[in-house]
Each structure stands twice: as structure tokens, then as C-alpha cells.
Amino acid sequence: MGGLLIFLGSGCDGLILSPFDNSKSEEEKTITEKQAEKEQPGYNETPEELVIGKPGTYAFPPDSMIDGVPLGNADSLTSYFSQHGNNSKELSNDRMVSYFTNRKQTEHFRIYSQLNKAGSYVPYKLEVISSKEKKIGAPVVENFVTVTNIFTGYRIHIGHEPYEVKNIYQQQAVTQWLKDDSLTVVYQPKEKDAERYPKYGRKSYKATYKFYNDRLRYVSYSFDPEEIK
Image 1 (cartoon, rainbow, N blue to C red):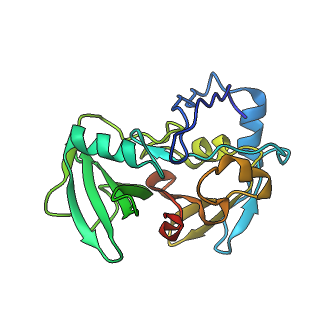
Image 2 (image 1 turned 180 degrees about the vertical axis):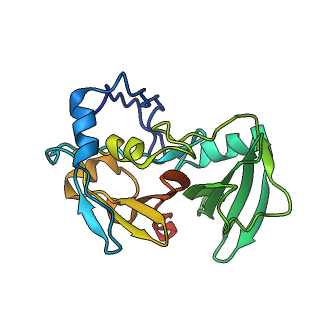
């Protein structure tokens, strides 16, 4: 995998990893990384599994955080609301969705959360949507966060190219397909990754990336809210 990946700590209630900058210029890329990009197959409408390089046998830590909010961590969500406010819409089954945007209003961050038995809202889905995406369905009010880009735990943000995302998952299986000029890349953990999901099961976790004209326009990390007790 390009660069050294360092994962620090785990949250008391969910999946947390420390962010790092995995982006590189063309000059900084190793021969192996460049070759891996060239070996990626062409895009098809039929979903196909892709592994860049030799399939890895190690448990892969999930990207489970956006703008400092990890999946499954109620305390971090409460802290985020106290810093940025909370304009939310109630959903069915004791759930809600909260709306945020970056300072240029080019990236829209949504947090879906489920009320648990302790009376706290637990985030079960995080998503970032480009303002260029037609299906935003923007709310009346969004709370501002004072950042240029909204980063994931792996430092992915709107505007990245497909190879930048897929190289992070190098040696791990992803599924991809092309439809109506939009490329979708999905990562779902395997049995070998179970240890990286201490509270919520790996089987319901999913990371989704959508690109248009080879630029990232949508990111989503989620697990089944029914797992929240």
C-alpha cells in the first residue's frame, strides 16, 4: 500500500481511526503504485470485484470517520453538535439526520443517528455529497463547519480521483461498476476483518464512493442501525 498507514486507538463505543494524509504527487508515487494504477481493469456496468496487488490476509481497519465524527460513537456526536450546532430532521424509528456544510457550501455533510436505550443518539451513517450532485435534496438550513474540505479518516475528500481512493484499499477487495457515466466503488469487509469491528458487526458495514467524470462526488460509511442497542 502506498505510504505508511498508521492507525491509532479505538473509541469506547465504535470504530475510530486517526486521519492521515495519503495523497501524493505523481513524482512521489513509487513504481509499484503507478503499476497498480495501470493494472486496474476497465469499467463495466456489471459489478466486478477488484483487488489491486496481491490479496492481503491482514485485517483491514475500516474508514469509519468523517470530519472527526466516528460511526457508532455517541459522545463524539454530542461534541460535534456542541461545536457546530445541530439542525436536524426527525426520521422514523427514533432516528434523525443532521445537516452540515463546508464554508464554501460545496460539500454537504449528513449524519444519520439512532436513539439508543441510554437516550443518546448514535451515528450509524455518515455521508458527504458534492454540491454538483443533483440529488442533494438540500435542507432549509445547514450548519457551517469552518473547513475547506470535509475529510474522511483516510483523508479522502470530494474531488479525488478513483485511483486515489482505490489505492488506499490496495490488497483489499472492492466492487466497482459504471452506470450512466457514474463509477461506484464499494468496500465491504471480509471474515478476516472481523476483529476490526469490536461493537458492530462487519457484515452490515459498507463504504461507498461515487465518481462522475473521474472525480469523487459522494462518500458514505454506514452500518445497520438495528445493531444499536
